[in-house]
Length: 291
Length: 226
Image 1: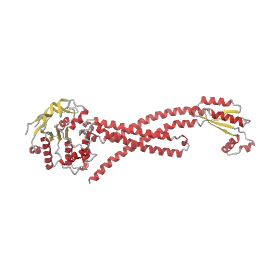
Image 2 (image 1 turned 90 degrees about the vertical axis):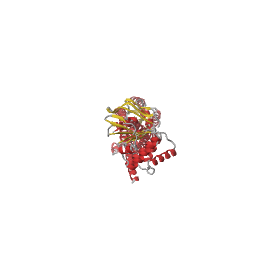
Image 3 (image 1 turned 120 degrees about the vertical axis):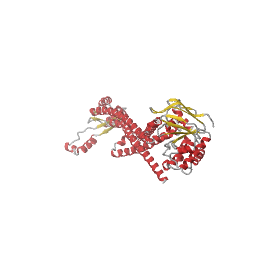
């Protein structure tokens, strides 16, 4: 009989402990997901900017030596991430594939020009730098013209700034909500133990002595919650990578590890501080105010 | 009997929030003295005990317990006042999330005991004193009302306190155990500790006569020793 009752009491305590850990882990997972977005936002921005392409159309009579000379100049330029020479035959093959028709056979000749596809380094991918580079390239004797989508470039730069601000504001708001949710969960869990805290006070335990095991337990709940949140986060990243292969390009494992460390720290901090204040609240109350 | 006062109240008025419960209380209790507090339910016995262990602030009049001034005592000093008192609460105030032994262990650790062997020996000693030597492993809810009461008494005895404050300690006990507990309290009292006991059990008072303090209509009447 005795062990049965004992088991039940411990089971109830364990259930309450587990549900608190699960609540904390879900909130930390939410923070972690946002952290992934924030940390990757810059990478996404760079990825998009470095895919902005300048097409340098070469004159039909451009010699190979001159083209290679221009390629070398471009590759050495601090603005340029990559420069790829596309011959007129390669351009025709690609267009043929896109159109699904052999236009060379239809026309009887290949009207396309050889070109160099230039991709900018992210930090220089703005209107001013691109215009400067365009002017420099156009001055070359083998270049017919240089073109890129100015409106797309402007849109990307403008939207990235707005997106960064929105994500930053949203992060702050979500962090506040997360802290409030964890705080509320812990306070509710401790509410059921307020009379126990009162009993501890009545038998002569100091505030510090009573508080210590509660705060340690709160920190442990934060750590367990953070570990679960990190596992969920890893699962999310794994499936995201599977579903969106392009993500491989922007995923940074060092960054993910830092983020997971951050989630653990956030778990410890929010749970520890919330427990500290919740216990203090009950320690400071008069007995009559506890009922 | 040592005649120095261990409890002293002078013109003390006791309030529960803003309600006046007891007016102009004067009470002196010496070391080794055994005092019954009697009166109807709601007459203020428990409130007086609460003032003595610092659960209700004394805001009017003067009071001192075991060297602590009840008017001037700071919140952080209250745990140290309580360590000088052994308190048996009407509702036991046991820690429901741990076994009987762990309840006693908590008090000893909270009051600075470190040595595991000494802690274990002291727990065995007090559990045997209240005839719970074989039930230390049980959770409070697995103990009967009387056993919980005895555990609360064992807890009060742990630190060899200067004063025992007991609120209806025989309320849940059978007559035989009541007698044993009363003998125990008198033994404690004879060893130089003051015992203040709130009770309704008049047959017990007849059997174990001692000084009586009566509570009636917000006033306290101190009867001379029986």
